[in-house]
Length: 344
Ligand code: FUB
Image (tube, rainbow, N blue to C red; front, side):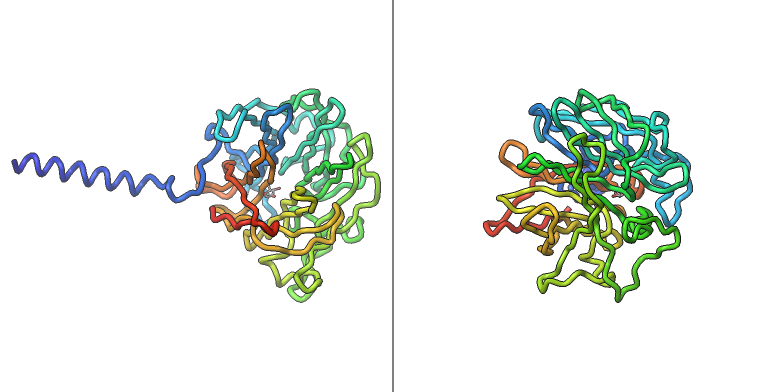
């Protein structure tokens, strides 16, 4: 009898210990794949299938520095799945840095678009002078492989392109990221290597937008600033760093309104602001996703079969800032068009 009680006690202790070490329950959702590290998921529905265009995080051995030097990615893998919750397919290398003639280092967050039988992959990478530019590559298939253009998009700079296809057939590219993303170096669309981040009392740096030409490979106009206003109609100051733009722009349309969403970077929120046209101004409305595990917070918002989803990432698998894993969760709107804040 004593032996029986003792072995049951042992079993209970073992189960309790394994329940405590399995921390999957701490998270709203689980990584979509685990055989490679992926981040910055830009999701689209192409040919009735969900395609995800993420960064491919690796441990390259590059030293961690204040500019994100350890985010030293060298290629892109494209993922796809038939439905939310379905099996995720990794289509392998779609574009390698070796095949981008002008590239130096660090392939960061990409996006993709489709027009007239061609898929376009937009990607930021530092050029050989270590300045971030945005490149474009094309393919006849959403999963690639993609063929890069010989030069970056003329007039492009900084990081995190998001290409939005409006209902009238126009395409717009939103982009920019401060600090390691170098947006602060481009006042008035002109490069200034010495330009600094803003002081707390100054108006914060603004994200950028430009309409694309019909060729999808060039800007149709000078790059403009995207204004994000508070409820009183004022631009945010740098000291409002829990609300001001840092990086990771995304645009989607819901019920005829334009939703510009972005990361606040050093305060790790994913926020959104609503406007009446693709150029804005956009009025700040709140937080889409609270800080995730890890430093960066990056996302895309996409409609799949009448429901809306947030694709995002955290560092659940590695515990390391630069080795991230992509995830998805449902996103819900309130009747007034505001978004219900997600706790990751
Ligand atoms: O993946 C590298 C950078 O980290 C992205 O470009 C940023 O948005 C942040 O997620």
